[in-house]
Image (cartoon, rainbow, N blue to C red):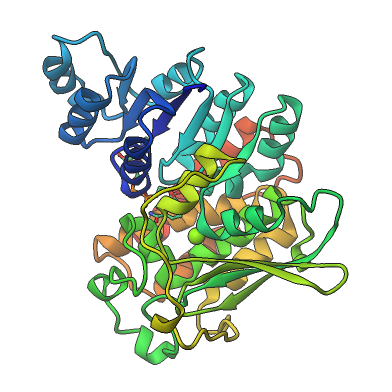
Length: 384
Ligand code: NAD
Ligand code: MG
């Protein structure tokens, strides 16, 4: 059996640790070549001692000495800083890079991995939100696979297996609606981060949990799907499905619809991305219909949750708009988590930043990086 060399970027996060759970379940299938994290040095060291990768990266340079001191008796190389991510993804032992970094910080490592011919398992949706057209063009040029880890996109990808010659009429991305589903704006005016951090169905990192409460996560996923599956904006629809059992649906040109179902557990889409096109037997909990006698569907409320409307607008305007949306969102979410801005204030700031950053119709990678920087600066100015 071929052992697949993998790099796990963001290995200490919610997706990163669940990826290592999957790897642990199939020890003869995968060899971990690289592990990286932002600042959780203790966990990175523990993972390194367990999986013996060729190298680890801690992007927070202040912690690099700690990691080095803990691993000096091993043959594991220790790198630090953001640039190191772009270096380590090129190792020839790596066949696939699973990117579970949060935010636009994941873009440059993805681009470098693609240009080095590595298949990509993508959890870092922000890569495609910021620069979807450029990244997918590169993936075609270097003939690498882009395997979605996001559960909705994995669902669509699974529904498309065997349908290569059949055009998609449209897709429905399901949304749980988050903890504030059904609330109006006067109720939302009073919600705090403690409420927003309680997702009804999924346990995830802080940023995506806030994005789920504000529906920005669904907006980012619409943009991600447009590029991943090469669709027109109007072919991507969102339907609220509070039980999170139907992970998304594809409608073909004969009107037939395919859906992928399962319990809400990210290990399933992670495993599919790692083992595609194969399905390996595992012991994850199975779905029981009798636990879910009702699966319900409703329209998203775009007037209350303005972020989803802003994401559709940004996608329609093309150019660097979605990059601005994403950067402004990263700043407002961080500010909301620090109690510097209200829940509803987040959309207002994003809207203002979108109006202020210069529009670029055909941005290069450097243009995206500059746009990201400008949008963050303007968002911070508005908040402070
Ligand atoms: P998380 O915050 O739990 O983990 C993020 C990881 O990235 C950590 O290892 C952290 O150390 C590292 N990191 C953070 N900032 C960094 C930076 N600037 N540079 C380098 N590394 C950095 O996040 P998560 O919930 O695991 O989400 C990761 C990505 O996966 C996000 O793009 C998210 O939208 C996507 N995703 C997550 C879930 C989920 O269930 N958690 C589901 C679908 C998609
Ligand atoms: Mg998702």
